[in-house]
Length: 132
Image (cartoon, rainbow, N blue to C red):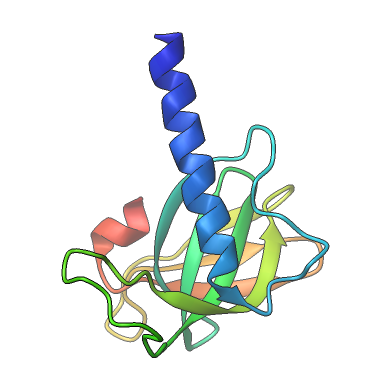
């Protein structure tokens, strides 16, 4: 119902705002929270033979690299230390085409993302991640 949907949207926006704060080098003129934008998935992804951690939203793909952080204060054991990331780029999904490749020993779980100004050869570690 409406109240549950509102709570869910609020919690997701809160998570995304927290995520944006943990991304070093994220452009100040950009925001991850936008009307009708939802976080679909976040997972490791190999793009053009380099390892990244990506966040797939309904309209953009954010490419990052996980970074190690040192805890500044001792936290209680129950408190989770959220990961931090180095920003690489935001990719608009408008007009992006997805090309699937047959599995091979050299490039398992491979596919390509192609837009007007770019092309990324990608692969995932598991077939399940690729299907998602």
